[in-house]
Length: 237
Image (cartoon, rainbow, N blue to C red; front, side, top):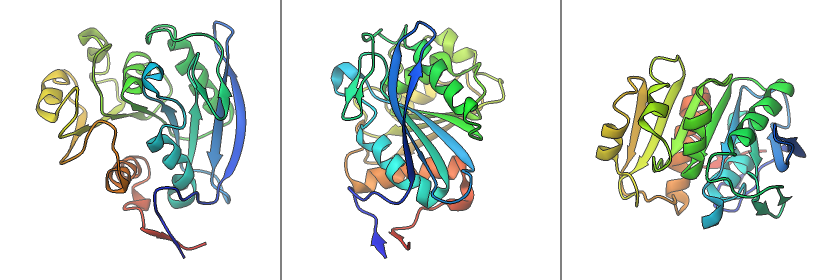
């Protein structure tokens, strides 16, 4: 039995890949898959702000890749947006303020589609939520899961295009967030009748600590593969 703690890495099949964007940049990433059988759903993850240290290994996204293929039968796609570097490597290009990253989101979703990965969700964290909201509304996805959405770069018009488009929008908003707390989020997201807002008591923007990590991963699994919810605290190989 393996106790699931912060640094645990459960069995998965991992594959490094590269993406070529519509404006001809090469991005680096990794796909984590269940060891046996096909995944039931796919998480295409979008990391926090690269100019503030965000990258594909930001801890919630890394732990999703380390745990969810084994615990919830999910495929997890992580990649560095343009100009972002991690131990996996550096993606070409320069930070585009959330504008030219449109091509990065498109390339990642097309990769998941080309691989035949099922039930694609965009999972954005902080800056990644802005990319999901700006560029996910017309993609072949089930919905978006937004972790600590700041709504700095997302306009009211960009929010309104999600209204009644048939895609789920789930926002995990920390009670003690630095940028947008639950009451503010309810006001800002008012146009989205399908919004599922999860206010998380005691949590902060960076979801530090195993309690916060487990809550985030539980909420993700509850949405995309409810049969695997709640996640166990131990893993039996």
